[in-house]
Length: 297
Length: 161
Image 1 (cartoon, rainbow over the protein chains, first blue to last red):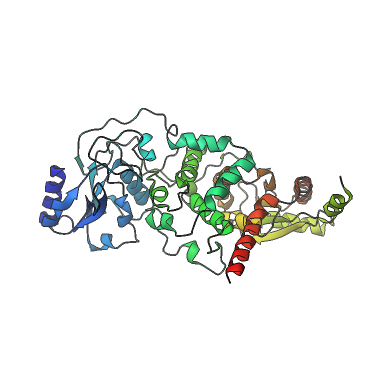
Image 2 (cartoon, chains in turn brown, cyan):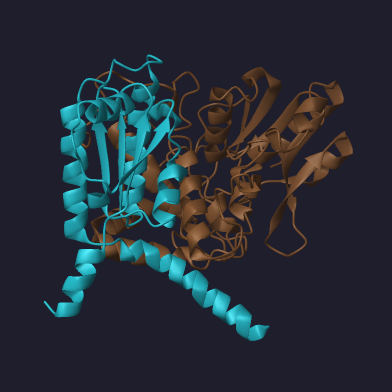
């Protein structure tokens, strides 16, 4: 990744950007952490390995103020660029406000796996990487790394979608018990909300208490409302970066419920997939007069 | 059927929450009243400006507070007072209905309809139909059990003092 470091240095020296958002080695061996380089010297620490799991696009949202200081360059994998596309689609910033240092990626590690320098097997990869079709990013300013072939799976099949299909096939009470068992463990830490680059409301509904839409204590009633509400709000927007599932301390399969919504949007709204095009209008801000309505009498 | 269960069945009345839009379905329900039509009294009508106002949390809240069935009703497509509110609502329902089904909600307890201000008869029919179906299904105990769990927690906390 020497080319990435030299490019980053060059960008900071010329003053094109004020900050480089990237990855650096973590304090534990085999782990990485988000890293912000403000001076050319600091660029020496930038790395990119399969241990770079974080979706750094969260630092471009209004939860943080990096964008206010000036143009920002971000090291982004193909999946992170999908999130950038959704944010541009939602007018959070303009494409020219940022500089994308795209990196090719052959999968990042799963949450329990420690990267040891070897090539990852499919079991060690994060589940999102099994169905990834943007190993070589499509939208970037500079590309680093060798080209990686994407898998040849049909969209919305394989990987997490197998689990989605399995849960879809369960009976109604089996589904209810499946989700109750998982939601029961939720401790309302809201890590899923904090880590999500698309959860950027200034005031979250969980912070409102007049009326109290979502009960604050960690019992099933509020847990159900919270997790369903979040899945609904991400419907047609989630790009499957998998950060919520990765950060969940209660190990709730949030990928399953979010990808169910992605799959539904793909099926119901003419193959819509979030994050592939910035010009496309998201399904929930548009409509067609002949939308399907077989469930309405 | 034992004597006791017959008795409880007789006493139990379904609680149906109807989220209706101000301009069409509420008008329809109003017309049903002024034309002296009778329909099942177990429906509680909540009037909203437009079906586009219906947040998914409304429905969850209704179930949390003990609703046995929910009816969501608005203007026919193209008749929306705000031109496009019900088109947006329809898309939202497509997703939300699927999400609720995926999370294990009994879809027989969730009803959607388009009822215009002139369709008093349709309102009466729909409400009676929803009520009849809910009576067949009985109370929505499966969802209400999450409320019981809270009491379990309360019990634990009470023990701990």
